[in-house]
Amino acid sequence: MDVRIEALVDAFERDLGDEALWIKPRAYPESLALCIIDSIYSTGAQYGQVANIVDRYRSYRTGQGGNADLDGPAELLATFDELGSTQAWAEQIGNRRPTSTTPGAPLKAEAVRDGASRLVGLGIRSVEELRLTAESDAIDVVNKSWREVPGQRSGVTWAYVLMLAGIPGAKANRLVVEYVADVLELPVGEVDARSVSGWIRDVAKTKGWNSIHTEHAIWRLQTRRPVSESVVEVADVAG
Image (cartoon, rainbow, N blue to C red; front, side, top):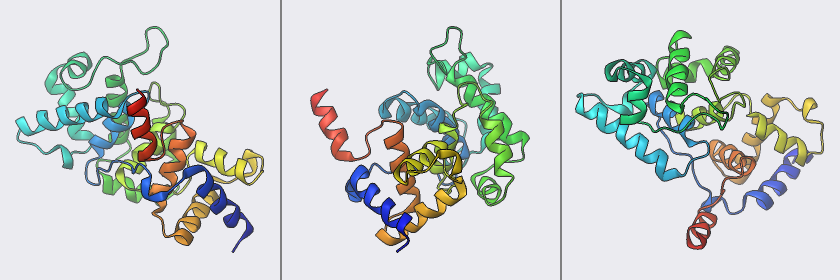
């Protein structure tokens, strides 16, 4: 076994715990709209809050005769137009949470609208089109554009969009790269994001794990979220 893979296997087993207990990413394999909503509202929020927003969006679309689980960003944008404004969308479907703690920061609903608009502008109207784009260098343009959405500069939510869509990242998220660089005791600037994704896939194959779930577990670790169900249960009891 490659010494890097061996080191990563040891680190993953130590830091991520029992794979059977990992919190798996929610999945919307045919709804890029729900991927956008979930990813943006997930930062700094409890799971129940995000689930409620997703449920309200589903209910709204059902009331229109639509299907939220098949919606793309164009259908998502249409709901803003139908409700008349971002404020109205936030009140009926989303919530009043801002994108940051900076005074005057726009609502997360505005970030949802902007993110959806950017994807449509780049010709990405479905999970399948995003999947095809992710297989080429064109994904870098999409990533860059997404990071220009208010409050999304870190790229954390973009990585989560890909996870929610069930798309393995050709390039690992920055936080995942930082973790791997630390494990391998390498300067982060010398670690290629594509190589990191490949190493994670190799570790997952060696261990019989799902590579997307593995990267998601690292992402949760790096964003200080519980990695396993057992931790969530303990936190709930303690809370």
